[in-house]
Length: 154
Image (cartoon, rainbow, N blue to C red; front, side, top):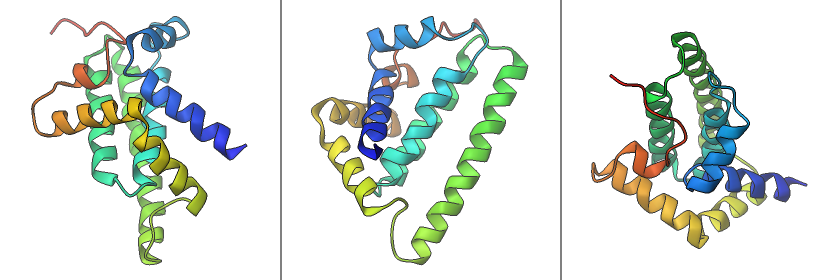
């Protein structure tokens, strides 16, 4: 059961980057609904951070936040997403601190193993490369997460 959950999470994370899957996400979202972004933000903690790659997870979550800010969501929806993301980050930071106190990374050994295996998958390596390029200033958030919404005109 746990393996199926992690596999579907990986699909969502990779799906957020692949245009066809991104289009599918948009079909099910209301115009002013950040749910697709919440669905890719949260798994980044499970996937990146459980495999000990916190820096990459932080970069990906930064990309997701940038995309939400650029989308034509209402101010209230953007504020709701920011509050939700801040709460998730605080809770996960607590989990990380408790794990670090034990000399470990968060998650069970099985979850950590699955996270590392997922990171080694060819499609995920592409995602990770794009995140790294973003971190070096050689890619934009749109290069990491494909077009899921139309950025608001600024």
